[in-house]
Length: 227
Image (cartoon, rainbow, N blue to C red; front, side, top):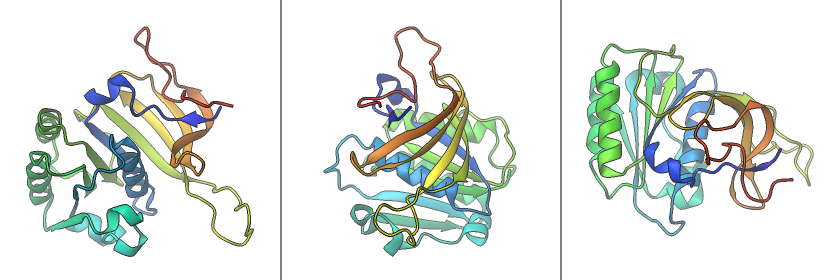
């Protein structure tokens, strides 16, 4: 099954806070968070800045954002915050979510710091929902804990396809995305990546799941132009 992920589904508005659990040994968490954030933007002409917050442990494990490697339309709009502690990162994230002049916010925190408990997670969810600024929270090498995010994913790298023209070049990125908790959608696993034709995220393989629990809602893996 192949089709665009319906991030513009009506239920999308209630999923302002998303968590992505990923290994610190690869960049899958931050890469997919950025891809999802970019794909979910309502207006392609939206030129507002966006915020990326990392705590010191996350920077040590995964490094700082490499601006020249970001999508062209996002490079000059990045605001990066390097927080010394998880507490400081959470403060910066909440303040960012209160600013409607930001297109979206990405947070990157390593492990399971005591500061990121359910209360702190709930504060982030409320701020994102109240002010309409999406939060994509990357949890590096963290165990599943209590959290209020409406969608929670396990993310890992998947094999890239062979390039069409140059077989020696690196292929487009692919991710194995395991949705283990969602407010509307049922859990499931998908292989997702960039759809070069539509310039959006697409599902390239479906392992299982994908049917939402509420009547009338569509599959997370379903979209227009399926083949």
